[in-house]
Structure formats: structure tokens, C-alpha cells
Image (cartoon, rainbow, N blue to C red; front, side, top):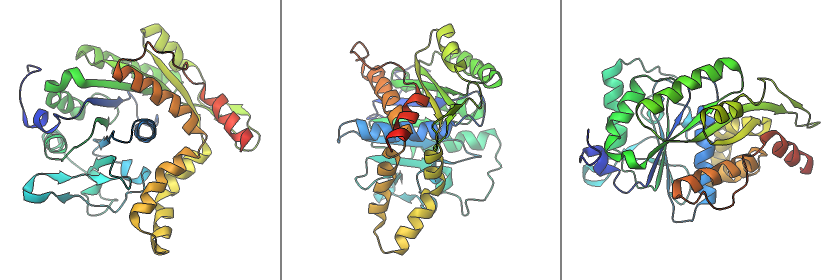
Length: 317
């Protein structure tokens, strides 16, 4: 398909400047948390006029609504049948979120679909949602399956605006799988902004001692070997885990106390900025934004050592 071809997807996304696919070769490496943190970090760092979209195409395991405290939200049709209106994750409407989780009657319901139905759903997410954002981050399922093929086919007219971020954990089995994902990006000529080494160590919240639960340094070594930009090393942060797990319950309690939902949603970003991981992901987001905007020649901080940053934040707490 020619990059200049006009399609329903290209027309819908005509105002989107950058589309970032968050990819991993293996499940369980924290890809959805990386996509969520990247969206929140860009939201905090970019000018107030910049809008961020977050699309969850992990159709059989949607987790973005839970992470942002948006469980129970539903999608509505726009005026005049202009498409689905995404769920907003903040008070100002700068964070647009879409997931199949918003379309299920119950969040416990399983999605049991064959390839063609998955492809049709992804097309709807891209062409029928009223995206009004500058950056669209797409959280994909692990591997190189129907969802990835559907995404790359529908996004082909936007190839010049399409990039990706790879996520891995440091251990050998995850690294071997992310190499296959890298091969996928090269096969379809998909630019890679860089690689994130997630779950790289566990910094104890009490003594700040670091334990390399899944080894450490494997992602960085892979990035060097393959000529990729190493975006940073992100440790397991208990405070972040608690925030992502508890945000829904906290929101329900706040709603019961009479606070407006918009005010509650706004606190998701504020709570995230209070976690030690925010310092790590801020640097990662700065590097991603610089590459997107073509300003990477500016002097930017090196890839953050997440363990040290979390330890420093905990020591100062």
C-alpha cells in the first residue's frame, strides 16, 4: 500500500503527528505499564496544548483502564454519528484513552475472537474513534500476531509518522523473544526509538538495597549489540505497583465522599509524579520526545539508571 493512499484510518488520524507502538516479544514484561507511564510522562512534560492518546489493542487482556483508574467507564457516540468519543483520563481532556475494556459488559468477560474479528475491531479503534491528539501511543499484545499485522496494514499510509518502543526484562528468555520483535520491526521497516529494560532490579523501600530479581543489564547489552538507543533501566517500584493496583479503589472511595470525577481523575498523574519511578521515566520520555521532534542533537541526559534514581528518591522520602 502506498504511503500516500487515503483511507478511513489515515483521514481520521490526519492530525496525529506521531504514532508509537509499544512492543514486546514476550508477555509479562510490563509493556502496558511502560505504555501507561510513557503517556503520563509525555502528558506532564509536553506543552499544555499537546494532547496524548493511549490505545489499548491487547484485546484479550486489556489492562490500561485498570491502570488509569478508568474501570467502569463507557464509550459514547459523538454528535451526528461522528464516531466514538474516547474516555478522558484527566480533567482537561488532554489524555484520550480507548480500550475494549470500555466495551465489555463486565470487566471479567473473556474476549474469544478469531483473527478477522480482531482485525475489524482494531480498524474501528483507528478509524471510528474521534482521536484529537498529537501523539498516539498504542499498547500492543506480546509477539507478532494478528493484532500487529492489522495495525501495520491500517497504519501504512502514516508510515512516516510511525515509530516503536521495545520493552524487555533483563533475563535471557525475554531477550531472545525481543530479538524476534526487533526482527519484525526490521522486516516491515518500522523505526525503533529505543529499548526499555523493565523490571531491572528491585529497590527495597525500607533499606534501598537493590536485588537483581531478573538479572540486570541484558537489555542494555542487547541495545548496544543491535545498534539501538538504550532508553533506560526501570526497576520494580513497590510504590508504583501499589498506585496502579489501588487507583480504582481510591477513586471509588473519593467518589463516595462526594468529590467530582474530574477532580479524582486529575490525581492519577499527580500520584504518579510522587512515585520514585517518575524520575526514571521522565528522563526516558525526554529522550523519546527529542527523537520524535528531531532534537536529539541537543545535550540530553544519558539513559537513566533506574535503580539508583529510585534509591535516591526513597532516601529523600
